[in-house]
Amino acid sequence: MQITAVAIRTQGQGQKIDRAKADDYRPPTMNTAITIVSGLPRSGTSMMMKMLEAGGMEVVTDNIREADVDNPEGYYEFEKVKQLEEDASWIPDLEGKAVKMVSALLRHLPPEHDYHVIVMNRDFGEMLASQTKMLRRLGADSGGLSDEKMADLFRKQVAGVNQWLAQQPNIQVLDLRYGDIVKDPLTHAQRLTDFLATTLDINAMACVVNPDLHRNRAT
Image 1 (tube, rainbow, N blue to C red):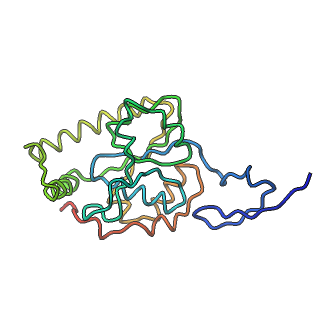
Image 2 (cartoon, rainbow, N blue to C red):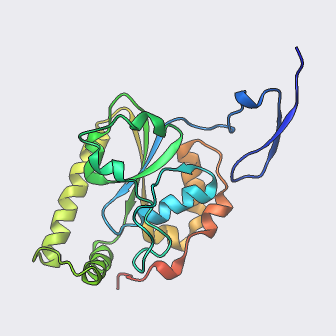
């Protein structure tokens, strides 16, 4: 049998690895769990998706929702996620990849798969200020709810989701704060790599964090 050596460049890290068979190649320590980036609206989920993409992980997005002034670097959304409760047939195709999902939909994930869920957290005041600006630009409103009422709803939703996640044996969770990542992106890029048990380029991940987009800071 003839063996042909091939050089394959790993995505994100730029390492050359000689393998006997290209078809048998898998990136080193690649985890086949499905990675879910989740959180409340305006909590930094798009930034997290961009970090994972820069690090070398394949991210799933259809680019239907284009970048705008509210998310100038893209939303990283995938329309099929919105119909997860009715159709989850596409979930197996996500092994080893990352997708963005609002926290309310996590309960509809098929239980036969393993998941790594990255939960993005942010000061409620910052989220509300950011969301209000976006709604005004779109000509929409918050349904007449006060900031206090919205914050209360956010707290209850977060508590409910966290309680549910803690009871799922097939789901591992990493909680991160948006503001902490902006302050120290390299440390949190390393935390992500350790959590996902995969090979990612932490320097590339840290470089895409843009402090200028933290425009609604808590006082």
